[in-house]
Length: 353
Ligand SMILES: CC(C)(COP(=O)(O)OP(=O)(O)OC[C@H]1O[C@@H](n2cnc3c(N)ncnc32)[C@H](O)[C@@H]1OP(=O)(O)O)[C@@H](O)C(=O)NCCC(=O)NCCS
Image 1 (cartoon, rainbow, N blue to C red):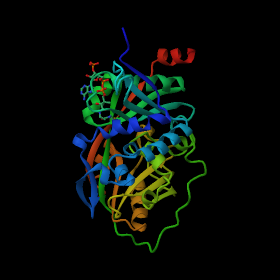
Image 2 (image 1 turned 30 degrees about the vertical axis):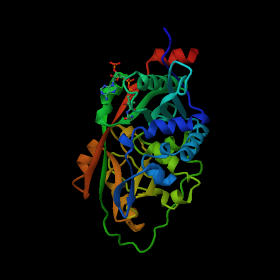
Image 3 (image 1 turned 90 degrees about the vertical axis):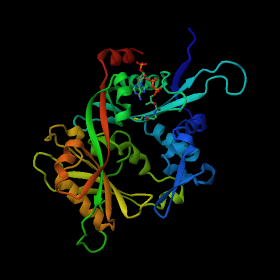
């Protein structure tokens, strides 16, 4: 039987096709822009590259995507494209790209000798769903992760995609909640002295094992966004990265954390807080324990001192249930972390290859 689709590593020449794939996810070409905090519909051709980025990240603009893919490769992570065969000799015939997946390899915080992989993004071109392209991309990503030494693959997805990932052999369900809220008025005068993050923080392997607790939403994103794009419009937005000493929290073992205070590009009063704390294995599952009460309070104090009035962050489901009584915050959305443990035969087969 003739193959109708195939998966291969992404190449620099794929950038325009990958952008087309991600842009297809904006149903009916429904682009938007923000004007004085008001969301308005817009046309692609009227948007600056940065405004395109706001519609969905570096995948929405070829210049940003080219930088993004270069960094991904330089850090040792992986990107694959799926192509589907179109018979004939006319325009469009051959093997056009119809999907892309990106996979990050990292050291597990609880056991730095072990490698794990995380699916950062996955997109099949709208109009080409349900033809096996998504599964082919996930399977290739899992196989290559195993070949690279990973023992498990994780992904964060919305409820809609749970059936798809289950079909791809993922199981387990750890809810991750995006929350937002107001910040307490800071009593501190001026800007607190932020300690710079450790050197080499963003180098492959070092970052997750030093700072990473979970491959939750935001982790892989800010890894790349934290490195400024060569674009004044983008870099005009603040990003503070700092080491924080956290107050001791019983049973949590969070002592030191790398904190990211990232200005919301749409509302400069809002900060997006990411906290990656070094675990000591005291919690029930260190791989999903980014924040405790003391850590969140400390982060909020700093964010307020930096001049922000609102915050947005990510918590695991059980944490949100506990912390909602102590902080003025509400749930914005809920996603799920799924894991697929690679089988011995998968790992073994790739070791042989
Ligand atoms: C999620 C996505 C990648 C799936 O890709 P796809 O190419 O349509 O999936 P496949 O055809 O490989 O499907 C594999 C299996 O999952 C099933 N499946 C796919 N999407 C499903 C859905 N939304 N609900 C239920 N089952 C689904 C398919 O029916 C198929 O099952 P089968 O083998 O029994 O027939 C695609 O829908 C997509 O790009 N969505 C938009 C972006 C997105 O949500 N990305 C994921 C971010 S985590």
